[in-house]
Image 1: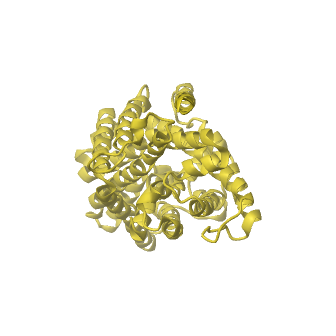
Image 2 (image 1 turned 90 degrees about the vertical axis):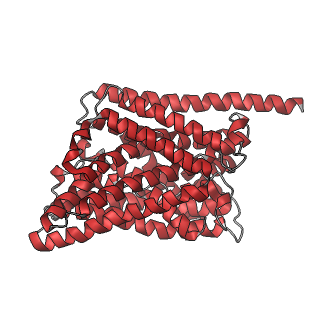
Image 3 (image 1 turned 60 degrees about the horizontal axis):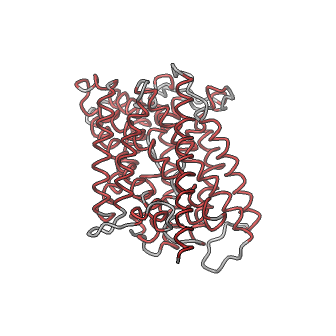
Length: 459
């Protein structure tokens, strides 16, 4: 992968159009929250990735960083939780793709919007197709990332153009007063802050595939900075455009972006934009799923090489040279989570549970990243290391800010959505399934480490 490929990879894994709808549903104050989350989470994360990836450019990313800073157990658990965080992530992002795809068929497909079987089968078939592409190789799988990258920012551009046009022609659907821009501190209004933090994750993904990136030590930092500008513009610009077209009360998590595009297109007479945008959004989320699947598959691969997981995880496909065992296991686990997330709840309830689980397990590795960033400040840095401007004091400060934001985000994710009918079941599923994932990781490490030590003692 070259610079352009990596930028498109970061865009498709860094932008999730579903969070634009979530932010718009909270009203104009979400714009201020976007800026706050960008300062308190994305900037510390991006700067940490820049320095850590230049210090340790080996394939494995945060697995390697945590291992170097705190030892084998921390390395394994950071990699394990990051890998397992994608198990609920895949069905969640594919549910979003499936919901927006319905706009391609218009009223003919509208009856499927509450069909559990439609969402489940779409997720399963999409996961299978993406897995096969990545088993064949990153040179094939990267085309899905590249196409998905185009599908990520193009609907935002369409929406911004139509939103400005509608605003000039009909006026704004939302009032952007100072009072409405001030974030509310009510529990119902701050729960989505965790989701906005989740939206800014992803700039660490390229480091997992460092061995497949040309001159990774130089390419990764440049791509992170360039892609970060695109990600930030899409989130803030997209949220403003949605609110220009729709009142926040009419925006939903699953279809809010397409609702805004559809309503604006009908107002300005651009009817052909609706199915095109819906298809682009669906493809973009398939690309995002493919991007994360291809990158995080390297985590159990390096753990297999270190003998913390069965050695088969460290095997490469004899023809295509890909970690096919890890990819297939991830496919089967992702399908399992499609069923677990949907059990006993509505489509919307399943989506909320999957998002909460994804945030918790996804953010635990970030605790390791920021802790590693803090610890490496006492180590000498060679001329090839890209240091944070300001040196050690600034490096430690951003690590502390990022760690605190991450901890707060995890805490918020434990609180169920106010409109969840069965709150106790939702909490049990989120906490219970997250606990199972963590406990399984600890058990695998314990067994793998004991077996590795036994093998070493017999040599």
